[in-house]
Length: 149
Image 1 (cartoon, rainbow, N blue to C red):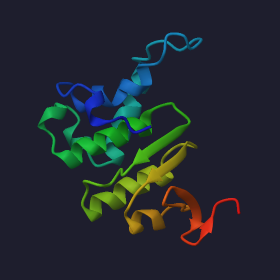
Image 2 (image 1 turned 180 degrees about the vertical axis):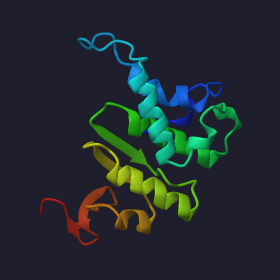
Image 3 (image 1 turned 30 degrees about the vertical axis):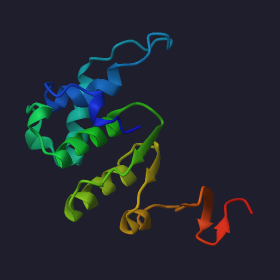
Image 4 (image 1 turned 135 degrees about the vertical axis):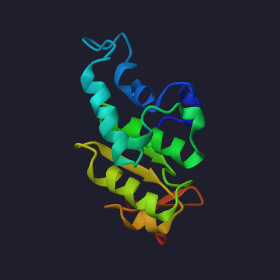
C-alpha cells in the first residue's frame, strides 16, 4: 500500500521514514516485532535510489517538494514486506521523465509483489499488464464489456 503523505512525520530524514513500514508491524503477528535492522535501512536506501531520491537521503521530508514527497511514499511501498502494493495515482504529481522511472520501479523492481495502480493517465495504464475500466460504477475489461460477462 502506498501510505498517504500525512501518515508519516515530516521531521524524519528520508531513510528513516522509508523504513517505517518494515518495522511498524502489529505486535500480534507471531515473530513480527520491530525490525530496525540494517536490512530495513538497506531496503529503504535501495528503494529511495530507485525513485531518484538517493542523493536526498538525509534530508527531512518537510524540505521536499510535493513530487519528491510522493516518491518517498512509493519508496516506502517498495521496501515494505507486504505482498501487495496498492497505488492510487502514484505518478499524479510527477513530470513525465520521473513518471517513467517510478513506473519502471513499480512494475519491475517489486520482488514478486502484486501491484494495483489506479490512474487516469492512459500512458501509465498502457504500461500495466492488465487494464480494467470503471465507468458508472461498473468494472469492465473494455469500455464496452463488463468484467466476468
